[in-house]
Length: 330
Image 1 (cartoon, rainbow, N blue to C red):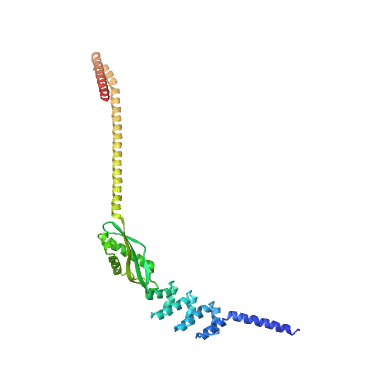
Image 2: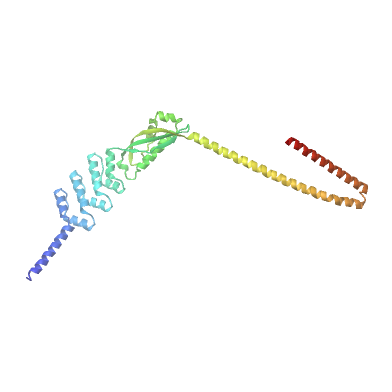
């Protein structure tokens, strides 16, 4: 009985070791690779585990590459995987490029993938051109009429310029700039409407695909329409602005006239004050003349009679004026 206990413990330890071995060493994956013609050893698979590389992420793409006739070693795939690349997509792109007779090396495909571009889609676009549709782009002809156009740009991926080349947004922006320039250089908007192909021909001659990851094959104007009369709107806005300027100048002149009027009123009040001041000095002058003997009693009474006569005349004239105003008002 005591002899069975060590034997049972030994069996348990062996089972644990076997389960750990099959868990740590992908034997099934090694068998698949062996019968698929991929030369990889158990030690390489264990090394992948130790390097924190998922073996199936390397072996499965390696099997596809081997079956497609590509010559690639596991070290290249491991390096690309550890750099954060998509190994499976790179292999798919290489296989597609080989079938389409496109010269694409693994290093180039890996660089495109690490640059953040979809290398497999790039190969597909190289074989099957892609159509980029621009939004509605508005331009103003020389006669002030707005012309709206929408274009469809057929492009093909340029594998050589995928790394560092501009994307679709740049293509759309450049085509839009070309449309605006072409419409703006037209003497009349009717010229653009009659011959919309002139837009695409002018834009194509500009070489808009330079520095981009695409090669422009054609630019087709999908829709062209007439927009607002920008020239008339600008003239109307200018007229409103001129009116406001004229009103401001008139208000300035009115304020200046009011200021001048107030200054004149102030000047009249100042002159009246001087008159009152001069009139207050008359009695003093008369008294001084009496003391010096330059004015007699007879002269004084004659002066008083003259003042009374003048006051009477002013009173009569004021009454006549008041009566005349009353008659006119009636």
